[in-house]
Each structure stands twice: as structure tokens, then as C-alpha cells.
Image (tube, rainbow, N blue to C red):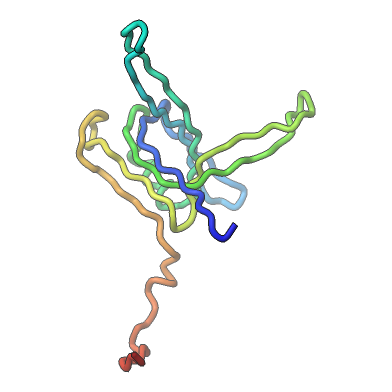
Length: 152
């Protein structure tokens, strides 16, 4: 395949407070459980139906983890962008391989936007929008040595 894209965009509500854990390397990781719902009217009965999907989200980006830790709580409405990732592990009790697919926010192509107003989980204003970026070393390069003559 010439090119591919692994990108997930979700708008949903947190089903529980975020779980913040420290990894072996000393950095924090955040785990979220986000619900997305769709509703429709059943054609045969006229009854309103609803289906909710639950999504596991893992955040490795330090800036986003800090935002989640400070501002995001159960019931918060959020927009996230990340990538799908599937982990494999062995169940110790049965010895069988298990798989888990998660949305991972890591690197420069991840973002988290809170869609609630401060202290209100049903508002519409944007409290915090944090987009992960390249390391600061790459952003603060000295531009005085750039050549002013453009060859085209």
C-alpha cells in the first residue's frame, strides 16, 4: 500500500474519572473511558432506541496528561484525536492470548479538547484545548543563520 492513515476522532463523555499512573520511566500516563452514543427511532415500533459504545483511551503525551489530571472529570464532554493501537498479552489464569484495542494519544498528531465550560459538564464553551507538539528543542531553533536569498 502506498500510504495509510491511522487516525481516530471522537466526541464523547467520560464514564469515570481519569486514571493517572506512573510508568517505570517516571512519566505519567492517563487512561480514560469515553462513551459515544447514537439514537434512532425504530421503524416498526416507533420506539426510540439508543446504542452506546465504550472506547478505551490511553494518553502518553505529558502535556495532555497534565490537562487531564487537572481539568477532566467523570461526565466531561471531550473531543480527542489519536491512533488505534492493539495490545496483546497472556492471561495468567488461562494461558490464552488476549487482545485490547485502544485509542492512543502520543506524539505530535494527538489532541484533546474539553467541550465543557469550567465547573459545568453540560456547557458548550471550550475550556482547554491542548495539542501535542514537537519537542521544544525543535521549535526554538536559532533563525539568525537562515539565508535570506531564496533560489526561486
